[in-house]
Length: 475
Image (cartoon, rainbow, N blue to C red):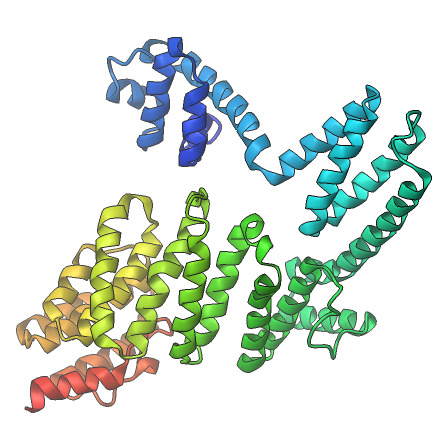
């Protein structure tokens, strides 16, 4: 795909539902053909002009397609600029600072001061100390222009003290931000550990489990993340989970930050909940999951299209995983049916990876409940998926389901097909595990089989599988 040639199409497809509605409102009544072009580009995968002309023959915009696409591009960009002023915190902030500067230049000092105070209040609440410092510097200019006594000397001295505080907090943030620079650097982990350790010792925080309470939120988050990464490098799961939970608990201290850091909150929630899943602490998982979903529910009117992937993981994938792994099979099956309905209804809007991962968890729920036909029904559309990890998983689930259904005549074909696939994808080293499974199935004894037999990404409750096998073949 030529990205330059198809920029308009990619731009339209990138619009969220709210952005698209805003653009449509900005298109005039006499530009109905642009509305149609917008809708057509939004819904189709076709990018090439010739293909568009063929597919949408008869549309009013077709005869002058290139010109109309360029005109639509300009309309979309102009609308997004206007939309972002209201819906992007960074752009809105910059617009406010420009407004304050203009008010001062035009001599409207009282209005400038009121806007400065209001903006300072909000920026300070969210620890946006960069903006706070910028505003306190602007106050110098306001004070020097203070022909109408808008600011008294006492007030100005107060602003000076605030400026010093903002600068102090910025310096604190910057000192910890240097750790983030190391994380982002493309160097081996061993070198990262050495650099991080040396820097933490330099700023006297190597042995600390937390920063002082008066440090900014961003600094605390980077510090806890750094500690969790050091634990990961050292394979210290307990410490890593401790710091992951500390990162998430920052939102309990700063609940007002959630809306402005919604994506971060979702990702931190996923890591936090995963710390319980990884240790098998399912009771805490379900308790905390319920609280998180209740918290997220408070933002139901927020445009979350950009964060939908993380939301779907929290809402569906994690609970299904927890029900399966905690052996709450009845609840797992009930949830799987709801989950499957969600996948079927929203398939067009979900990534292939998310769908395949979801199908795996849904299939496991049916497998553990000994509904083997349903396992096959669920995975059948995805058995030939190109992503190796998913196809590998689905093929094993397919073999186990047919085994439990006593479809012995299919076994030879399924294993031969699997072996051919592994060789064709240059995964010959994995054939040993599949041959081990084949031998176990031929003797109707899966007890020697465990997860280490297979790829590291494939996981099952083999204790449950062994019980199912006993029910089917030993009774």
